[in-house]
Image (cartoon, rainbow, N blue to C red; front, side):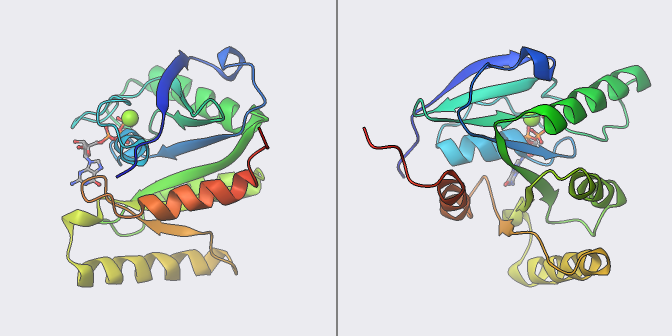
Length: 201
Ligand code: GTP
Ligand code: MG
């Protein structure tokens, strides 16, 4: 597997503190523990680049990873972690919203969904907020190695049906596993397409 030339650049606690750049960036959002940091590691091909944890609430800042000196992957804190004190939850929510609404070089956000679960209200609400705020996003179903193909098909169909209640057109959708690397090529090609042709040297 060809890994990407990736390195950690910096962590920021607000959109104002994020790197001053016009290079395109792609962010990963979703419930705490859904697998955002693991997906970033899988995409770049380096375990341990983004910090992961089996307990929710690991990522608390906006983390920028620079890829090939050309673009960024951004690891965000999860939303909806009920065990956090309310003040901390509110703080994270403001930080996420500020970032998503005001980061001008943000090309697309990948919203991660646990493929094992039936549609969760918190995720649907987050999608509705993004759509209503004009923030482009695609859906990524995570942890597909944890269920059978039959079950996966059933769950994805249920999700699509749920989304069709609100939207005529479904967002782009990827099935992934950080364990088997399923979905890696598809997501990297989507990113490549969104960035357009590379500048000539
Ligand atoms: P926060 O930073 O706390 O919001 O979580 P996160 O969304 O970044 O999740 P993280 O990547 O830390 O992963 C959470 C747990 O799920 C870890 O124990 C991972 O090993 C596990 N995990 C993530 N993706 C996969 C996957 O595709 N398959 C399996 N089997 N486990 C996964
Ligand atoms: Mg994380």
